[in-house]
Length: 185
Ligand code: URA
Image 1 (cartoon, rainbow, N blue to C red):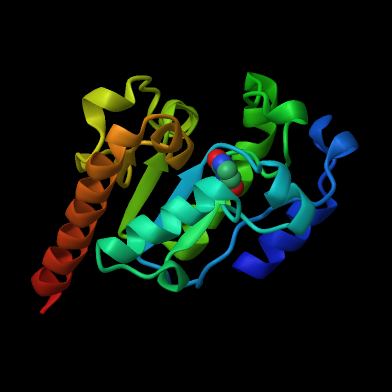
Image 2: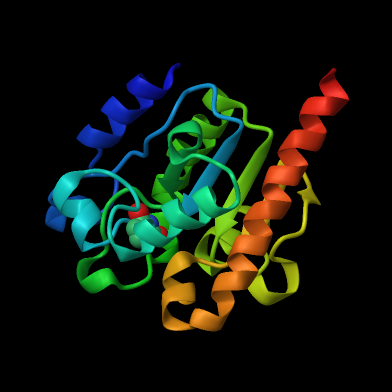
């Protein structure tokens, strides 16, 4: 199943109550052959209005830090653990995550990326069952797939001293990708 078909299912989804208050579901965006998937938490107000991931302030920071590390937003796939906005931007509940996560798993299978970047605690917990971003950010973690946890850009906005950490982690990601390219040569 390709990424468009999965997105079409997400747009029709009513598996949990988040569909009652959402304006637009946000399946994610990026090329089907992306080498990296970024996984955030859930759409915010702006994302819910437009139907695209990470387009508010946190999204601006994500785009800028990708660029500063020499990566391009257009080359990566960006999505969230939960595809519909939780009311008042509360954290997604465990039942909402378990209803929604099969979509993310199918997106990962369809794209088959070299690395999955987990932005913040909700994504880290949902995919790796770990909770402390500060212990694992910027590390390559090998499980069923290859993961790299990072700080969530919203946390960086709240805590500006994390900005250099986030950009350094993005640079590690870029080095990991160019090393894996040269391993293939
Ligand atoms: N925060 C997220 O986790 N995801 C978005 O798409 C936007 C903000």
